[in-house]
Image 1 (spheres, rainbow, N blue to C red):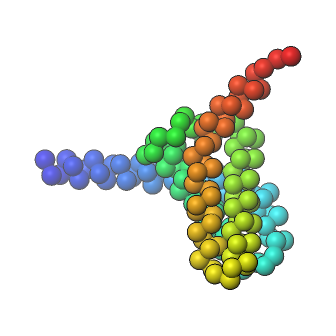
Image 2 (image 1 turned 120 degrees about the horizontal axis):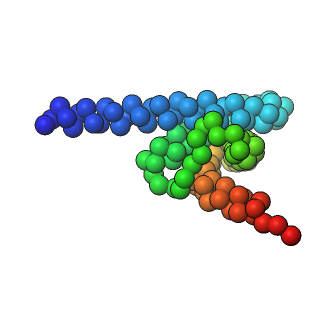
Image 3 (image 1 turned 30 degrees about the vertical axis):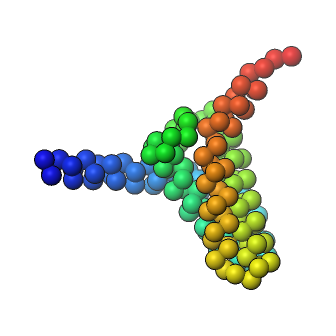
Length: 145
């Protein structure tokens, strides 16, 4: 009985790691244009800290939400082509926006930890709202005049 519980726990963790791995790949690739713009943002140390935090949190959140460890709605598969442009734009806004916001707050208050806290606190709820935003976008795109 104890081995069965351990086996199920290992399977659950293994599944979560698989979800996060593919989410990290997906988010990292889809936000490449935004990362290029962040290379020119100043100050580079603050932007790097907040950008890396945002990228990491986004990958963890997308993998966790897509795997339904927290229910936020139906997420498209990583390779779902019809939603690719929407996911790219959405993830780019999240990563770029929270990186710039986090670095601005970090510089304004002179506390490096704000460059970590702000992207985490902002990216999580925005990413959790993605299925609803996608559903609304799809319903609006089906409207005809």
